[in-house]
Image (cartoon, rainbow, N blue to C red; front, side, top):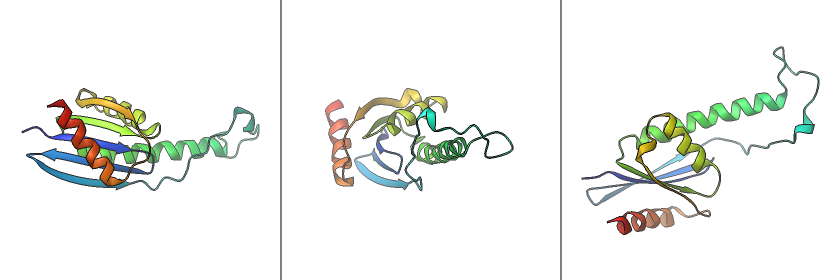
Length: 136
């Protein structure tokens, strides 16, 4: 039987709903990311903050991106065996994660990417069931 996955994701939390053999498993992965603040281009200092000439903002951006990669890797590890993946969420993380999956050669498993508001875990589970039920 098919292993169908629905994934609600933002930068702080991923809710993975796996449906296989009429059984549902919900797995939650929490990120320890702090809110990422982006500054306008005018906020860069001309004086470097470290020996490589990087500003503090550059260092924060690199740390943020490294943390995102680790977070997305953990999510991908948990859904790697899926036959189909429905991705949804409120912000840009869903699109970033879809790109991450494409780089990991798993992009062909993505069926849909959808924007939604914040949801409870129960609403996420119900949405995944509705999505796969409609497809049958």
